[in-house]
Image (cartoon, rainbow, N blue to C red):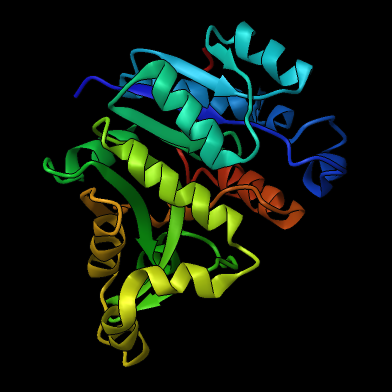
Amino acid sequence: MSFHALVLAGSRGGPDPVADHAGVADKALIRIDGATMLERVVTALREAGAVRIAVSANAPAVRAEALRLGTEPLAAAAGPSASTLLGLQTLGAPLLVTTADHALLRAEWVRAFLADAPGDSDVAALLASRDAIERDSPPTRRTYLRFADGAWSGCNLFLCRTPAAEAAIGLWMSVERDRKRPWRIVRRLGPGTLLRYATGRLTLQAALARLGATVGVRAAAVAARNGLAAVDVDTPADLDLVRAILADGAAQPFQST
């Protein structure tokens, strides 16, 4: 499938403990195994077949790195959801969205995700099961969503397959706005869905399908084939883990652009 790609590399403002830990101005510029994290992500996307790659960032140094890598810098909006909306409106669908701190990203994971995403979906998200993470990754602390079919962790890979995905991004934006008012988020699912979740009968796929239905889109979850896909760099400990994984040869060697 022909696709475009967007890399979210915006800064949240204020000190970044990961960047400080690595001694750089911005997390996306941390060098791992001879290349910046942004370069590693862009290279994987290019090898996976992305036709057009844009980087959402406002920091001048990150935008300069994006230009060096032959990608299109886009202004980062107020939050990842708004930046994704701008990316979809600029690049069009199908659009693959990931983050600059996905330092272990492999082209094969991207290709597998695109192949496994249901052909009738408007939007899809890649998630790794706890079993896959514990099988493929060294001991690591991940945040899990618990459903009837197991515990799942996000992999920072999203597919806006059709233009209808814009409605899903609108839902994402409303969730960001309501993050301090969680009751507004959960009530979108309806009492029946909440009861199924509370009694341990709601699967991940059913939850996403229900959430997508609230805005009229077909949403799907895709199970990652490799648990390492759930490892990104959110903390200094994550950075040390990624460097250790690469040093041990658990991830493919990097081929510079």
